[in-house]
Image (tube, rainbow, N blue to C red; front, side, top):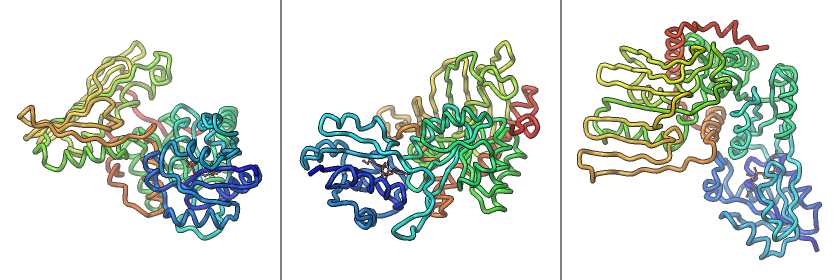
Length: 455
Ligand code: C2G
């Protein structure tokens, strides 16, 4: 008798799960299915699981393919189970290809092609539908999105669009999703869109996605002009659509905890915030050659402004910039100075100068220091006058951290959570306003509507 084993969350049970179990059973005579516990999913960074463990087990049983169901509750359990149950074949969907090769030591490992275009659900009406998401753009950040989205339940990445069809096809093949030549067809295949194209095209893509009644999660900087941000948020609200700016720091648990502590009074009234983020880039990269939209501040400014705007607000009295420029006029290192009635902030960023990536929030009773990479907040300390009086806080930051914004984006779409407080439309409008002011001082007035024309 050939024994087969597979594992999964099986949340919001859908065709992908059903077909996986069906083919897993066909690999042998006896199929064992491991269903993950909520705790295990938490530890492996799977977010947004909607169904209870019992419901998920029930759905697996109802499929009729499982001869036995067990609980997967810890990392490393797979190898033990395979030995304990004398399993001949381990199988899982191809979105995990390579990740379980180590199990070849114990049994045959087979990756079954993942199911694309899951739309309807089976077995029973779900309390929340599966959101089909499409990606616009095929660059570095888009590459990071899919593995992160896989660890958020309730979402299925289905499609990719890039004006250069060859890039879209290459990306689609690699990630087993569909490439679209026409933007209209792309929109028809999805419920929501993740925009990871160059900054100057964001405005046009957001506008067209909203017009096609799609929810939008757009990479930072969302847009480079205050009026554009205001217009897009207004339109999204009128259409009952969700528009999110993707600044991963804003949505990660560590940063949320940090803001809570900073605003709790533990360090008194906040008087000064200094945030620094530098990342040496190849001088030939787009960021350092695109004289219209490149440079350090458009690339990293969203991060270093975030703590200042979230804590001191967007009603600053003065704003000025100092930059070190390269030969082509792009800023290699920029400091933005925010002056408020009761405090100040300095946002420092650089693609051509390396500095200590630290965040320091100073108050009348003490200060908070977050070492690099504070933008992936995982650990911070609260210091007081007495150097021995230090409180330490930590929070896990999993993977590339995009899963947190994806999970909150999904929660907002499903109306199941009010996560907007993490990055409000007011925050995004203020960020766009500062970007616009920076580009004006640089003499790079924005004309994104024309310049960023979607090709
Ligand atoms: N699956 C699929 N097609 C989809 C979605 C999922 O074939 N469109 C497969 C997955 O590859 C997996 C199984 O269905 O083999 C269950 O998927 P999930 O519930 O998302 O479980 P997952 O997070 O992939 O966990 O230890 C658990 C394993 O790592 C799998």
